[in-house]
Amino acid sequence: MRRLTDDEYRALGKALARDDMWPPALRAIRFLALTGWRRSEAVLLRWDEVNLERRTATLGDTKTGFSVRPLSQAACEALGPKGEGLVFIPARGDTLALQTHWEKLKLPAGITLHTLRHSFASLAADLGYSEPTIGALLGHRSATVTSRYVHFADAVLLAAADAVADETERRMNG
Image 1 (cartoon, rainbow, N blue to C red):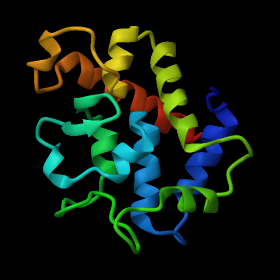
Image 2 (image 1 turned 90 degrees about the vertical axis):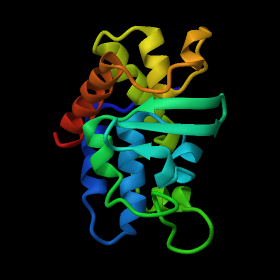
Image 3 (image 1 turned 45 degrees about the vertical axis):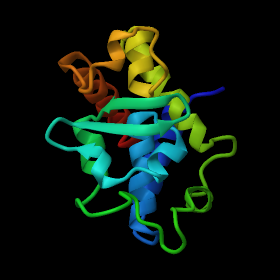
Image 4 (image 1 turned 60 degrees about the vertical axis):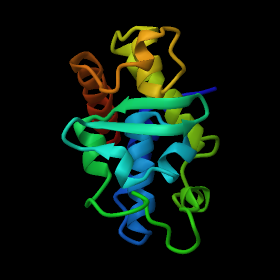
């Protein structure tokens, strides 16, 4: 239940610039910082769920069920080159062991992958976005029936995703 400080954002940005770690793991961690997604959502993300043209991801099975997520331009870039199957390819095994890679970054104590989700939501609130907008960015279950029939991200959500991701990158780059 905490968010990153400005110094921690800079430490994260520096850690993600390393060249001695598995590149898909570094991209996945950057993606989490830029989207506020849950770790499992990123690790299980498949290319057939991503629409780069519309800048959306359509997730069929999340903690809250079906979800269409807007993707910031920065998040799209963090995905890396388009391929087949999983977006973030594991070094070995079926899925990326993201926690293992996270621990190798040796960030200040108390920062978890879930801290990135809280930080994203907090930045969105700092930037003046409403709780429903933040909830849509994070994939919280919507209270409206209409949202179940809308399968794209509108311009407002894409602009919000861009603004929060841009601010995250600004803080990570000092």
